[in-house]
Length: 230
Image (cartoon, rainbow, N blue to C red; front, side, top):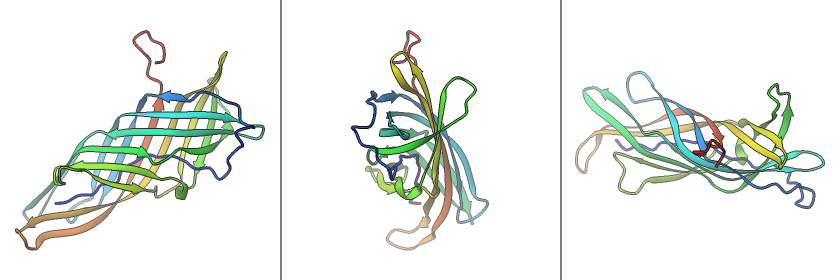
């Protein structure tokens, strides 16, 4: 069974780009604690659909706030993440088909900018919500399973819905700094199932099935051994 899995979280491209001369210069914020959950709902050739919950294992995000006279923008210059390995298995008419995903890597395909809308907050932080059109989001992914060759399969992917999320910002004596970022990304996927194949011949199972995935990603700053942010 050859499987192609499309997973991810992503970035944003705003249709409004503020002039560099009008934007307040703020250092890029490195968020090295990237986690979250990924829910996968996938049709299979036989039996009930597969429902799998896995997690984001590790990652890194670099994002910079840009303050103008009219709005607050955020430049997302880097997003790398890996999904925790998982496996699925089905038996169709006595034929066993299994897939084990050992590596799922996701990377932002280019630096992007998006605008935030300030919303009320009760914890003293400034919360900016955003909605990004799906057509403006592009991510690069690399997938390695137990049936692909030594080199992983690579592809570019766009979300199936608009990307939504929030950016939490605090103001210190050093100015504005980003505390955390949350993203919600939904994707359509396709899995190619092959099993019961004879050498050089046909397969008893040879079908492409569709599915959906929803990723909730949270990025923040991991404290160092001293208890302070790295």
